[in-house]
Length: 220
Image 1 (cartoon, one colour):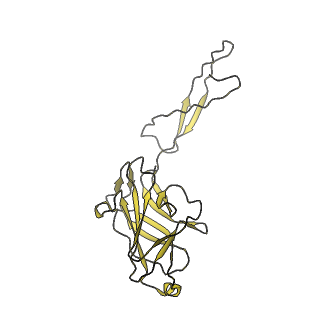
Image 2: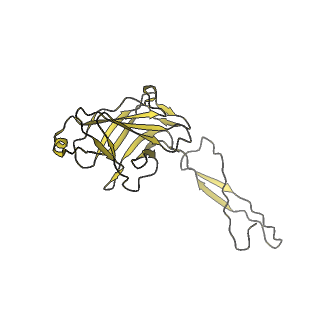
């Protein structure tokens, strides 16, 4: 019941034919019956814009505060994560996928991280050409069988302030489907040949650490 001069919001869940295109306008009709014998029925019309899952680049945000990958941009700094020589650190997609996610075959996964060398021998950091990190992305389990494409090439980290650095991973030609309930796992390795630690932060000076994907649908 709606009182006099009152309002009510009604939400309908509908199934739209697969032939509909993104942005297409759908015309809807509603019938409202007024039980007041002095009143009259109403037949308002309404329009809605079809919003469907879209393909294209999707961004995951790298949280050092929780070691997670999410679809929500970081609100600010979250403390650094240090990775020592030959060490690794994992970031896991949170929450797990609510729908299947397909990574486009042959596309590039771009891992953008704010990285610095944190050795106490700062001068050695600046001159170190053998300070490297690599990125790998996995489908739900960290194993060679579940790795998406190959591990990235080496990225040099001889800077002593947080600088955005990029590693790239190529999705196999056939594409990769990550199924409902699974999680993407980003693994970063400090594979330097010298004993220098690296540090990663989620946010610095308005710049964010991210993973960019080319997908066939929204990440939900």
